[in-house]
Length: 153
Image (cartoon, rainbow, N blue to C red; front, side, top):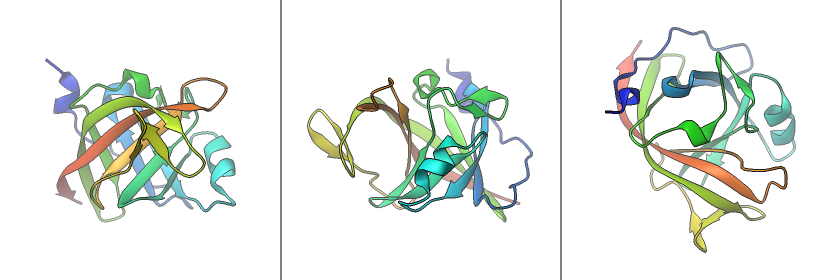
């Protein structure tokens, strides 16, 4: 049985400058996410206790360095399991997600591939979480989260 399916969102505040907070209770992640542009994305990812959120394909991606501090836990995507729950804490609601895919993707210039095919979110509400596998940054761990519900504030 995967206890990550029975998680609830933690009470948290969205820090000034952040747009939301992303939580993956199974790995103790509760990390502020910041909107980023091509010019600011590296500084957002490099900052402590912050991750980058940006549009990607139909949905969004959340990116941070592997092992980065992320609340009480660390951004260790290889520890995420299928069906683990994620929460996107927004100013007026909390969106709930379920992990539906895990893989290691190849990093291209402006996209990711798995087994030679480009990987993109299928819906506007989908989120791909990514982090490097090794120091060369040629491969990323990817956890694909699909929205499954909404909790009003």
